[in-house]
Length: 295
Length: 295
Image (cartoon, chains in turn red, brown):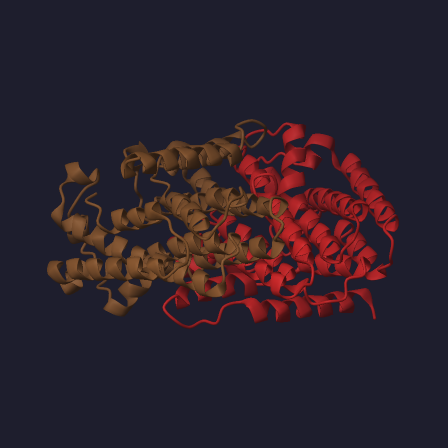
């Protein structure tokens, strides 16, 4: 099957898995259930769960025990977007052409919907304990999920980003933000896939390295596209970094060096991926598509 | 030792345990670490971790594997206070005589500090996997922690409470709010204590029942004190429910019926506690002190 068709098939599969775990919109808490479901169903490429499952398959995983973690990581990703969009944060009213959660449900429910998704992710992830013969793997995976989401991961990167808004950002802090804000959840995705498949330490470590490189390349490519693409091609406003006076990899290192950096990171990621036992051509294509994307 | 002295000794012990897990205030994320530590160290009676540990001891637990969960539940409790105080929620500028987190660190960091504590709680809880010979117990305990914190627990109660602010609340919804908003974390505390000690199903269930009754009684006592105590004795403004036109158990059922209900719930809780094998007189005193408190 052609890569693009396979990718959208996988995304649809993730949607079905998520639908199984998302709450039914009934009972006293109906509003929060509805706000959660609205946020998750507002779209997204489902890259993190797909990366996770493909890494699980690469490492020989064959069960369904990975599914709670696939749903969990996408819920966490969504929760961060819901909170990012709040008036006290970026104040965005639209995301992917749809009204953001706080606009539809109010600012208080926006805060609570983010909280709800964040915690519910762990409730769903914990269901893996009932599906695996290896509780220690699920325990380690939950630990990775929390670590890479929290203050030494996504939220850590997010706080530094928020704190430096409107200020020039030194390169070491920018690197830190990219590694944590974008990189950490990708790292978690691939590491959890490996851990749940019972991969050895070396493989888990390599999976983390691949994901971190992909995350960095993805983010730098984002900076490049903001400068070189059109609103039409990208589906979101371009030149927003310049308008917001935002320090990016491109403003620090220039367009050419940035393009070179993306190519290097991408080559290193594929190289490390080839060092992992097992084969998954779709995963390799996915990684290349992420760093070389045009939108 | 006298009960009060023992209680403050236990609270100091919880503080020491939490200090071990709280982040060091250094590195790029220093601000968020500082906001987290400020929020946790702003005080509190540490009732949930104490309840958890005493239940663990009651059920024969003797290790330190309970400590990560003790720290985790207090972090989650704190995270809910940090978000409750936000301008888009209650907009409180002081709590326990100290400036609230968003007032000190800004509204954006207030949101992120709550998120950070919420996720970090699971990161800390997951450390129990490295401390126990029973990963399946830790897995179940993490599941309980998430469930009782999330949309079918604390956050579920919180969302219904927020949604009905300023409106008359029917008794069934009020009961729902009390059970989830206050009761669920107490339930989690006692259930996790029992699970980590390896208690049987019946005991875990009974622990949950005791906690739920204590939580309800605690909340009704709160409503009674708001009406009958003085600001001086309570250390916070009284008559706030009336001023805010808030439906409480007392406004629905009257003072006498409410007092009777507290006494009944308290008797039932102690009765159920006595049905649990093992003995812990301090835990019984603690439970009675919670429901009969005068402030």
